[in-house]
Image (cartoon, rainbow, N blue to C red; front, top):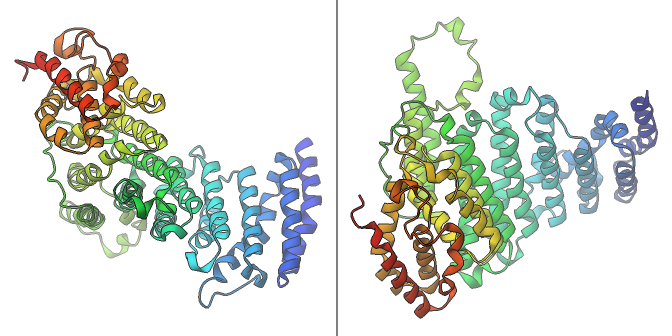
Length: 526
């Protein structure tokens, strides 16, 4: 058979190198030679041949990976002493990444083993290993989850199991802590390590896509991603401190925005909101704003404990106590699954929405268009899938879309314009806050805030004018008739017709006066 022939051919080339790696464990130079030869061979053999002997190659590589982490921790036991050398450690991790990239892993048992073996290396402290070693270790996890997907029939069950949830919590916490450590390191922090860490968290979320286990991880993930967003936003408020180092990485910030969008769409999608909840009935009250980002983060972290405690109390009250013999058969995985009921949704939003209100709107003014593009796409995705559940945040999210729809970069503006001119315009009261009430209320607030905006800094004034100009042009069949807008002679495609939106203060004030006059059509509206 052709596949068997390719496997034998690959094995013939790989077997001597793998045997040498198992025999020669002390000399760093010798092990490095074997790893260089293995790297060339891994890149050269056929895909079918390599997949046929991938686990054989993994065995000596994982022994090396174990030693990479152990040699950099106090009292770590070494199976390969040569792994103390950074060049050997990096070489082993590069070979592991190539293997995982070319041979996607699917069986849950192997996924579990790889997470347990690779994660400690990815979590090595900054001071214990070079940037290259830390980055290569994270790239191994990146390759694992990139090739994983969610197609394997057993993976969904695994992610909801006790071992699966523990693996997810372990690897995501480790990656977010690594990203935060690089940001806090100032100008010595690694942008590459920070970006790869956050990007790998996004790959984890894409691979799981199951609200059950991700709901348990929600407080920690939102907290970690929010720290990444706050660190990136500091570039605009603490220029000198954040212009250098990992905290200034726009790529990491864009990945953090993407991760937040993936997480919200996976855990709080309207399709998975419990029936009869306050969200579905449009009766949820706006949460009180947090006094600070730190306060919002603390409140969110408390949710992890409170949600589990409330679920246990409800279960104890509703069900009779199990006999001692029967209790032994209860699966341990239940303590890792959140009861996604109405109380959990409402409690989550009370803590989540104030945090989102703190971290997302400032990013509209980020100087890098790649960050604004990620924000535009992410917010539009969230509003498309979570409009009802995230009703308390709808005005804030809509304000972001309105501002970015007038962005000078087409990549930023186009997703927002497509959203405003598409399905969102047809929302009704039955689906939550209708376009009529949400848009009209926001325009009224924007007009009332014109004077204060004019007194602020130029960036805030630009965003205010953009929000108002866009809002007046949104197609709104429910407001003034079919296919019309508040400014009847304009359409969403005509937003650039206000060139002064990007000009200095006097031009902006002139634009605001024009836009305020156009708002006369609001007279008599609720």
